[in-house]
Length: 143
Image (cartoon, rainbow, N blue to C red; front, top):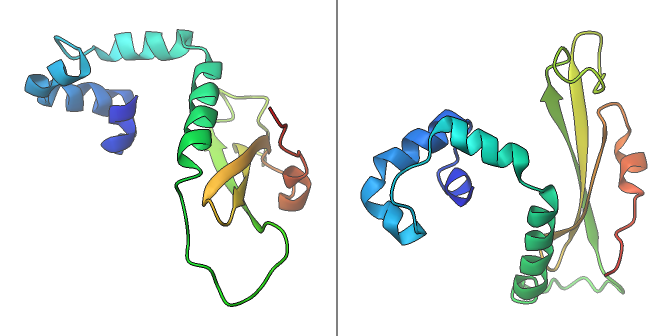
């Protein structure tokens, strides 16, 4: 899945073809041959999403302290948070639960970023029609 992000792949076919074109370098990843599209799809379907959540929070804990930004001259007491809300379009015939418009499905991803660390503190996924401010009010859980 790292290859998918590094290569900015947008489909399973692109991942499979990209890995196949880098056959000589796959041994660095511990692979003898590139996985097929069906193998990648099967593994992603069976993979527990908690793995990615735990990995993210592990990286956030270790790398979050290393991220730094220049201090501005404006003095603000307390942390500053930035809110971003992105609509992710979905096919309504496949995801019938994601009603957004008459013929369009969507979910909205509300991301709360800590200004100093430039990293997400909380991500909340809601129905596409939920307002940006309402979707942001799912406070992060400590732990």
